[in-house]
Length: 155
Image 1 (cartoon, rainbow, N blue to C red):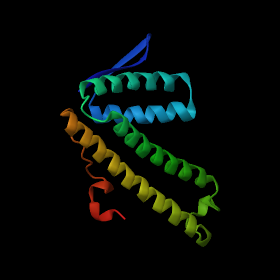
Image 2: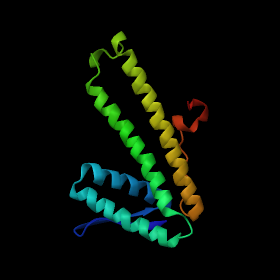
Image 3: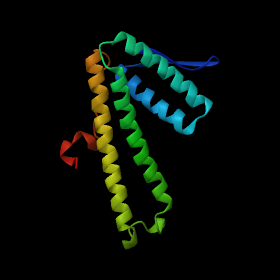
Image 4: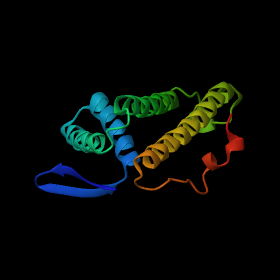
């Protein structure tokens, strides 16, 4: 576990995070900063950027360029899928009558995309767990009472 400082001088917050979580949050904060901008996103990303640099030094035997690219790609793909769902909601015909026949194709696409996001999130958690195992830090994240724990549901 590592202590991570996030915030500005007037409002410092410390968090204990394992390497897998730092990596995941680094990728998410990078995406937020790249796509949304804003000072708070920049501060958050800078904090996770410094933390990931510490991790890289501590666990220098690993190929961190490839590891970071993988986690960034996973989160980028999830971001794109979720953005598609969000933008598609406005284009649903008769949103108050969601079960109308004319919505069937759109609902099938939304359902398939939702399952895909769930499956990619499952891979994201497995990747975080692998990083924690390789770095001998943190814990293994296991989802309970969640669809992703039943591997038979994966398409």
